Length: 310
Image (cartoon, rainbow, N blue to C red):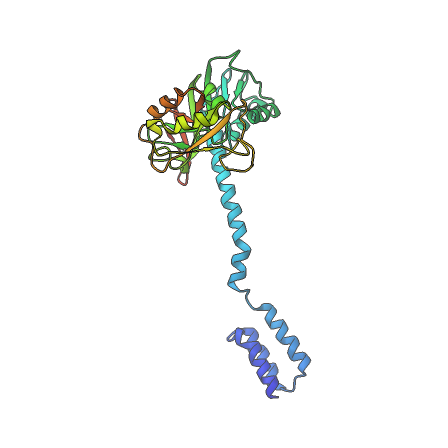
């Protein structure tokens, strides 16, 4: 009897005050001679209704929240990419198609509007091999600068944007073709999320410089010695040319057969246009990722919605 009472108490403590507790307590007070097997079964049934530990709930929902956050970031990129096309691309235009995870959605939107008939007589110039492949998969008519040296608009992302709308670009390795195309456009529309905005270029993202393979170590030393590059740490890009992480043992090769050196800065670049000029004057530098004085407008996706800075 004592064992039965102890088992009953352990079963009903978690349900104290509940209707279930009161009803079952009446049944047990009528007869306290409960077989041990029944007691075990009741205890098992009660435990099945006990709340799951908080720790378990957190583990179950954390991956979902992470997935939602990632989806939200992609959605922001999609919104600015689509808005750029909707606001700036009209039928009959020559359009420059950028490269990267944000520009991807602008290319996608051009393809959608051509297919639906909202846009007609569009021709586009891609800024990389992978953008060319995406555009071809969407049946976007493509041309090159050889036949169309003047563009109506170019749309692309950026790795950093300063208050004067100067940019760092080339994290994806397409900086030369991007600059060649976008400098020929009447309007250059930049699409970013708010994390790309900065007070000064440099510390937030390394500045990529495309250089010739010939005597590349000499070129890197020459770059590091420039007055405007004082304090930078030049790092030759290894592995894939499409990111500035070391992900391979071989030197990264661009679409143009060149190398990239990434310039790491601890402090903001004091004069980005001056640095752009000095880099361009180095023999062996093909081009660099500083895009100064080129931007028409920046479309920014943020927590408060989409804004445009001109």
